[in-house]
Image (cartoon, rainbow over all chains, first blue to last red; front, side, top):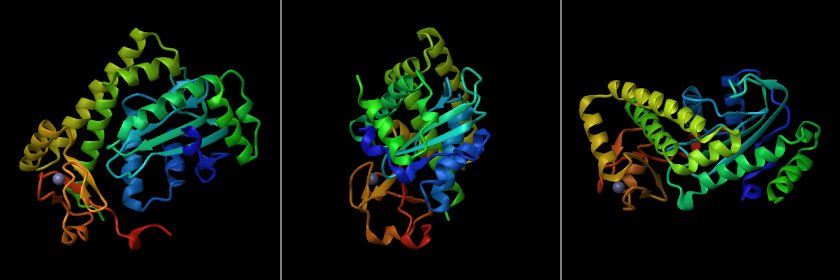
Amino acid sequence: MLKELLKKEHLIMNMQARQKDEALEELVKVLKFPPDKERLLLETLKKRESIGSTGIGKGIAIPHARSVVLDKVYLVVGRSKEGVDFDALDGKPVHLFFMLAAPPQDPGTQYLIALGKIAALARKLVKNQDYLNIDDPDEFIEYLVKLAEEE
Amino acid sequence: MISGTLEILIKLQDLEHMLEELNSPEYLNILKESSGLSDEEAREKIQKSVESLKEDIKGLKETLPKDIVKKYDRLIKRYGRAVVPVVNETCLNCFSHIPTSFLTKSGELVECPNCGAFLYLPIPEKEKKS
Ligand SMILES: [Zn+2]
């Protein structure tokens, strides 16, 4: 499932952002939405962070939201070697973002299943910091897919 | 461009979906699994978010005309949603066909002629970023 959602054109290998709002903006921009749609999705994601950070600790954050303006599930992955100040649970900077955005009508709760899979992947990713050392986008996606599929 | 009222309605509906998600047992499990929080800690974190979200929903509603809020609340009560996208000329609340004459009204406050839900109409191609 994550394999279908992980796309090279939705991957940022070196994020420029250092702050929370900037990071969300950078992640959403990748989707190349029309301005109204981009703005509404961004506001929903920001609101989600304002009621409780999705920085789950150990360098990973999973910003996520459902929005009326979306027609399908999108996943954007962003990496920051320097780290982003994201008010994470453990207060540490975030180095890897999985931004999941989905339409409200969600057949088979695909969105929550994807969110669960990302959470499981995150647990595996924090065991080592290999994701910080891969610089080829294809290799990076391959690494995530392989790790996600491992038992 | 999206009308101010429609924009607020969309935001409001997105927050309702957020609330629904926070209250789901799946979300509690995902949070516990991903963060390593205990059951009690996770529930507490979610509860805080829910309270803050309810305040936001209340605040947003206050910026809308009263008759719109009334209609919105009635739709939520009846269908669990009030603002729905139109996909393939179909209302995603009641699945009835939306007349072609409606489809040019993207950005305007339009209600489904069948179920009364507020419609989010697709954005015409020309407005999309190249
Ligand atoms: Zn309808």
